[in-house]
Image 1 (tube, rainbow, N blue to C red):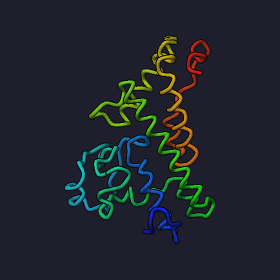
Image 2: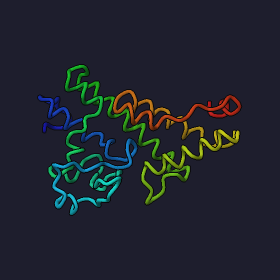
Image 3: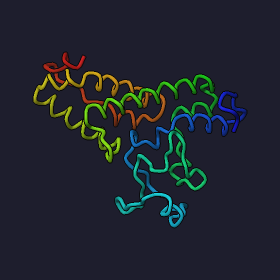
Length: 199
């Protein structure tokens, strides 16, 4: 891999630079777990990750415990699911539909949007130590839907910054990374009686 400031000379190098500046697919914002595949060495992975059975398949929780900063600490032994995953932005770079400098800028701004969302979720008490981003998202969505159904305008006033950061992160995910993940993050449309409080 080239130095961080140097332009990549291959698709693999571009992917490496973008992925090690991002790591969002490992954080638990897009999905709550990854499933092991038949080609995975289960014995090796069981020593590296806490595995659990979900719907009859072995899986690992996201946020992945192997994520250190933005990088995978078990990269050479990472599961097949991780090896094969390509976000929409990476696919565009591979297909030469997006140039590397622009893709790098998108990664930087999207990571910043998710960092802000994590801080807002933490400040609001939804993302606490021991809670995964996926669980925090689920808890806030449930509170949001309940507040909307009951017309609790104070909820939307109190969480205005969180809702705004959530919408920015959701848009970035849907546009650049994973449409399904972006849809999962999208907040429901508010009824007219409370919409003003969230604007």
